[in-house]
Length: 110
Image (tube, rainbow, N blue to C red; front, side, top):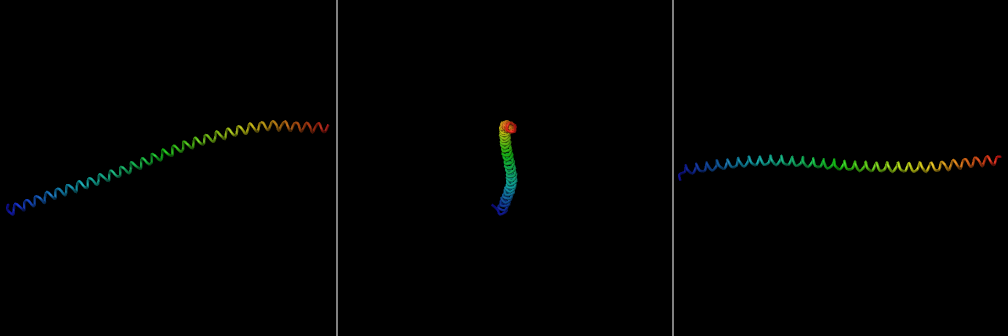
């Protein structure tokens, strides 16, 4: 093999190596771009899931608080009705007592 043939083969090998390196660099850039896109998408998906979970928890807590509020309002209403009925009973007793005292005072004055 002559020196010229050897130099041509070396040049061909260098050209192939350069082509392989350029192709590898392009693949590397594509992979990096793809990885960045995937990571951004994963972050956005995770943030969306976190927001959805947060909204669900807030909604559940609001429902629980609404139920508790209704329960407390019902309990307060029932207690008010009970107190009003008790007050009505005591009012009747107080009226009877006052009438008896008034009659006793009149009887004593007569």
